[in-house]
Image 1 (tube, helix red, strand yellow):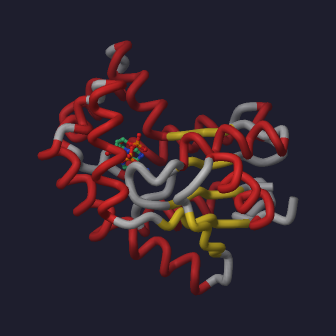
Image 2 (cartoon, helix red, strand yellow):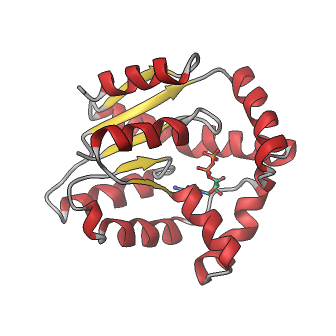
Length: 187
Ligand code: ADP
């Protein structure tokens, strides 16, 4: 089963994605985590992604398609993947569709985590204090929210047109949200 988690920055995709991955016995793949690790290690991908990420901009579709292709080539990804925040532009959505089709697969579910802007801003301020992610500073957060509205919101419409989207209210206790997430994928 292939499941895409979508939602604005700070919506809780990482937390819920890890719980869902465990419940379903599938690997979770987050481009954000992979890119942060690549930046830390100074790999070629990291060197290319660093400036865009720190400013809150999206990394180029070329780089993202390369990392998705690598991920889908891993043996552990053979039976499905929880994609956390992986598809953020229409070209990425089309590329993902091709890569899955090459394996006779298609996205099964798209979960949209619904959170208000107020709640997001509050959560990111807290995360900045704890994790000190460079892109959680207020200027970069504003850029990320704009990238989300301009480039990622159309992806939701793309999947809505395919009838794949389930909306999950993502405010409240972590386990209450986790139950909604499992229900949304029929588990
Ligand atoms: P958030 O969802 O809160 O923006 P992530 O950790 O998922 O945080 O991503 C951090 C950054 O990594 C993004 O701001 C962007 O620069 C880059 N990134 C992650 N996934 C993608 C993607 N699919 N396309 C382009 N850039 C991405």
